[in-house]
Length: 550
Image 1 (cartoon, rainbow, N blue to C red):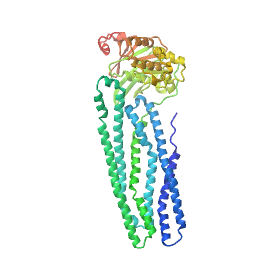
Image 2: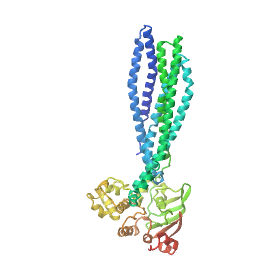
Image 3: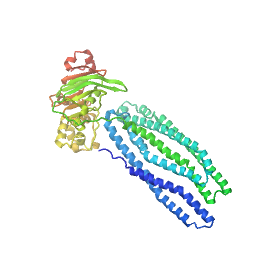
Image 4: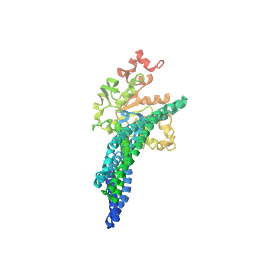
């Protein structure tokens, strides 16, 4: 379901309420001035007094409406941006960048700042109305009143422009430092057991908090910008107002202004000198601009597009044609061309960093190649519909993330309302049926109440992927299992099957069970052959380490 965009009517209402309030604020000094002149001249002041009361009433109604909508509009926009970011980040998958900490920072801080954008721009324009209107009103009362005011307007405009630029840059630096800290904390939490076991907690704390210097520097820089702008605004405002008062007093002494008009001129001078409000408004625009840049960086990354085709009947034949993947312009996999027969197990082996997990991700279309094409039973993966792709291809990971309210929900994730028998069969195939049956409510036990070992988590991850119709990819998915359980599962994986099994193997015994072995070396396919044939090569044997025999 695509998130519904925020209602434009909210911003329209904000503009209307703010505009009406600004116009009433501009008209009120003139009405009060006419009232004072009528009283001084002993004329009937009822009409102008009534207009003054009406304008006060308009302000009493319009100001609360403006303030209410000024809070509602950013809330709607922020919620919309966060939904979009969640959908886009999940759609990107491994194609995203920055890690979970960076993603959380963008969704929380970045989206909140960007959500202020529409309302901030409207309020910024509205904040200009009293200032600009005050200048027009001063010119209406007497052209000499704006002489002193306009003398400082150029400097004020330069101040605002510099303020927006400096604040935007400072906020971006601050948010990036926040994201760096969040990423390091996420990494530390994910590896907390390893950190404790290695007795490196103090070192890890220092590593996580190292960006605090950058964060503090960015924060101090932001406050310096705000302080400088506030000081300049505090100085410019009174000077502008004082010049209007001085000129107005001179005009009154010359008989060119009435007492009521002088009172109005003083009030318009105060409105025209409202630099502080302008600075605050443009500060919100600057923060929104910085947040928008952070959000846009994610939303501009292209998400994978799916076709509409379904797979024809077939055993799951997997082919790679000239597949190349680059990272930062450097090939990680280069020119991979191979054909794996359907219905048979294939192992992917190679030293660390040779591209095994990347090849597995390509086969499951978790990553798209920069060049080349991958086909399943003759159909390019990019032309398959999303439903067909996830129905026909399953992936089991080394460290699976289990999602769902219960154990059964986690196993059935991605399937269309799997029944109890389907879940039970998947648990049995992954050798997870026994330990799940011992849980208080079996597969209905809440995940939050189910402490799991690494091996149990892997078995549930394998059960979740077991539904695959054509291709089952195992990316080191049995590394935490005991030898007996792994042998039992690998017996099912490497035996006769209705689908193709692609196994990232680190043990010679696993590779020996598969019909075909894809040997990767330095991001290229060095050989595709049965394990027994490759075992005669000492370089191949070295992949598994000394003493590891089939």
